[in-house]
Length: 208
Image (tube, rainbow, N blue to C red; front, side, top):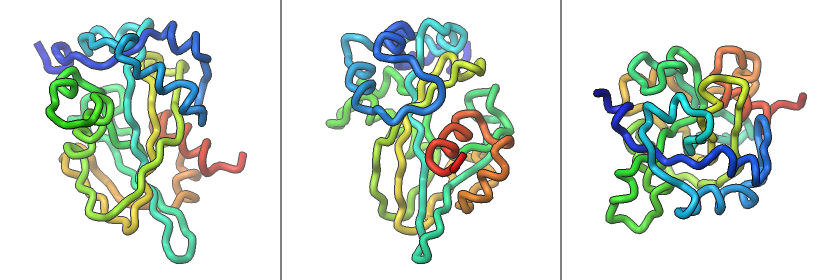
């Protein structure tokens, strides 16, 4: 049995998301959703293998975007390509601007003062990237995409880390072709990116 099949991941009923207010794409209304979606009374941990095929639940995924603004005001974003060893096979070879992953039942057992969501986000960051700079963090919105197979069973929680210097490097061999690139270049190549990254780039940087 694989780790994906045995891992217990944090989920909320899709019906709860619809009760609060269904949307397709990006929502800036963090306060409207997150307290209720992260309420211990409403969340549960269920087998990841089952949840990947069950749209009656949404897996909550922290999605961290690293942004750098230089002295001239040019904005660059950390981006990478997902290698074949990354957990979600349906996203292999896609480019991404988001670092993060599932919140596991193991995150609830931590001795830290963080809640399981925060603990899981920090664990994912520590596993995937080395942050060699100071930064400020801001929770900016949520992503929902019911138009793709992956999106139907996930709900993204978007955090922007504004870094003082563009010093973010991969820790995992399957995070490849990395680096900070100007927003304008990324917008010209949207079709190469996974859907969540497209949604984020359009929500924050596109003038369409």
